[in-house]
Amino acid sequence: MKRSFLRILLSGLSLLLIGSPVLLAELREFTDVKGRKITAELLGLSGESKVNLRMESGKMVTVALTRLSKEDQDYIDSHPASRLSPVNIPEKALVAVTDWNEKLQRDESYFINITGQRAFRRAIKTIHYDGFASGLWQYAVVEGPYMGVLDSEGMAMFGVSRSGPPELRAGSDAPIFLARYGTGESAYVQYLRKDGKPFINTRFADGRPFNNERAWVNLEAADRPGGQQQGNGTWTLIDYQGNLLHAFEDLEVNDFSQGRAGVALDIRASEWAIIDTDAEIIAEGPFRRVGKFINGSAVVDGRLMNRDGEWLMEEKGEWQIERRYENSESDAVVARRTRRVPGKPRFGILQRSTGEFIADIPDNYYVDRGFFNGLAVVRDLKTQNFGYISRTGELVVPANFSRAAPFKGGYAHVSLKQHFEKAVINLAGEVIWKARLPEVGVPEPAEKEVDANPPEKEE
Image 1 (tube, rainbow, N blue to C red):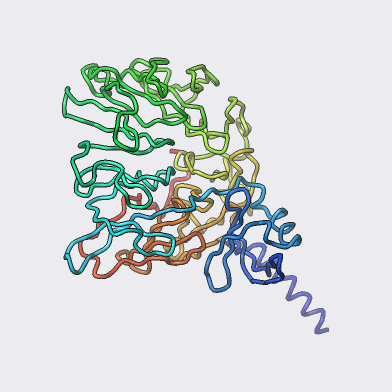
Image 2 (spheres, rainbow, N blue to C red):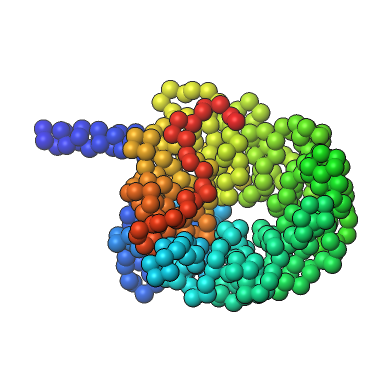
């Protein structure tokens, strides 16, 4: 009788867990090749040959796969996370923070390392977050007091302590920076190397960062968006040598990603096509909207399309991808069911590179912008607190934060119980840095506030 009751109780508990609002990562005893054991959770693959584990203490460790036992390697290989492209994190990621300096009685910006310690002592007036946080992770654009570039050791490549360009922009997938000089009709841009010398001698009226060895430029002031023509400008494609490859007059264009870019077909940008780096049309459409190509595909008109212009999702299928999720930088993307299904949540996770379904997202969790570094910010709609879920739908970092930003380079800015309690966490949710109090005058992060009642229709 007792055994029957226990069996029923366990069965009911199993059903309860299956229908629970969120999955939790599994604790497991891992063994290395020397027989040493640790109890930890699998957070995900790190690059092609390493894995991130979170120990019972909450500390994250990164271990080479070859150092784990055969049984552990088989477990990792069969885990749902192994189906997804590994997350590549820079080995020497630096995080920009702003803190209150009691001695100076003012805000101070500086970089911290993976342990949360100040990386170098150089005084910095302003950190431009498109530097180390852009994905290049070798250089950062700062003001200290002049505009310039620092490397990951804090050494000035140019500018910083002497006069630099009035404006300097990172964002290229190579150490090439876009400098802007002058104002008004006499303003021009020039591409600079990491040492501040011209990468291309030609001066352009306007330009955008290099990606996939290509950049978009405007040749004359009148061709700039909002110039004398009051249109979208004549965007011309150039290569590393400054050769003019193709012009798109008075049309909007997207920057290249994985060798592909969206270009508008009409002045209203209501119709788009997709081109390669030689300006050859890969998919003529016309499409209503083209996102970035990430992990081999882009969100085009709410569906996934690969680099060859082939659809990975059915035209009137089960899922639709909304605009706010199209540029999530990971092999996973949040999608909305096109119709209500009894017993099923409204949102789920698809594999970006294949379009296959991975996991559901409970209705009491709202995902903001999608997956970055393999994790997505979620808001618990009951508590209004923030946490992070993995690409397999597991709540990796509990929703205990009053604010949270997407991960960049393996770290994320959060607010603890109060908005002014600024902190930085790693992929395991471990707090590696906390801002000193009082937080007098510390600016709020430029991250968009999450809508607690998101619309169900696509934007």
